[in-house]
Image 1 (cartoon, rainbow, N blue to C red):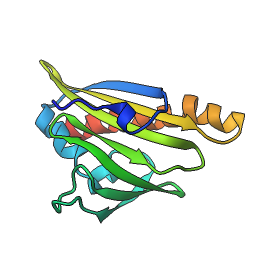
Image 2 (tube, one colour; image 1 turned 135 degrees about the vertical axis):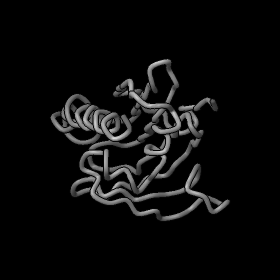
Image 3 (cartoon, rainbow, N blue to C red; image 1 turned 90 degrees about the vertical axis):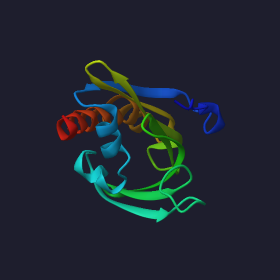
Length: 155
């Protein structure tokens, strides 16, 4: 397992963390989580994923870029940490709800399956109500639904 140095990518605080025990081996969970274009099958509101640029080795791991159509927003993401089958981290370019973003999906094998921990670091953006809604309602809700969908997909 390769450690992630969060401060290398963002100074933003940890805002949201969700954990789910998925009833499947880590390799099966990794196959789903690592499939960029397959995100549409478990991630709420992701309608389409375009693989924009492979990394220097021509692979779709660390250093690659993807665009995710998230509702009306286009999320421009870069994979900054790739550690099969233990997880990856991605950065999203600044948008109206958040800035200075880093997301980390970490997988840990357990005797009963795989513990998936998804952590989001960011600065909320916009007026007070938008910041409050992003941090306390919208982002946590999407993360919870995504982890439940992931569990259903691989279990």
